[in-house]
Length: 79
Image (cartoon, rainbow, N blue to C red; front, top):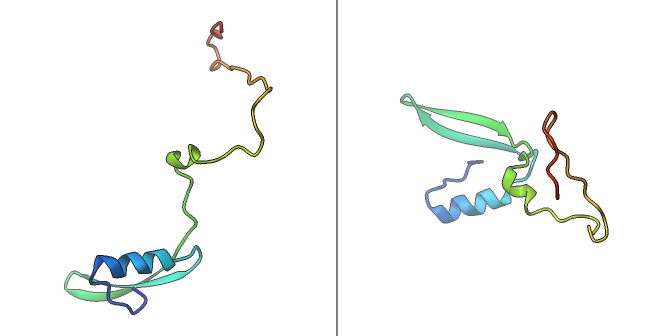
């Protein structure tokens, strides 16, 4: 990748950590008996469900009432 041979897990790990959104990565791959160079611009990683649990609230919820909303057409359950 980018001219560096990634022949150990440590090299791969170091290269992956240095990547940034928007960078162009050049990969040399061997496919169908031929070497090919592929260029790829790294996009921003989408937000994953696991990321949502890691987010912190910008303001505390203490003292706030959070309304419970039932899905459309369902009766709301009593608290």
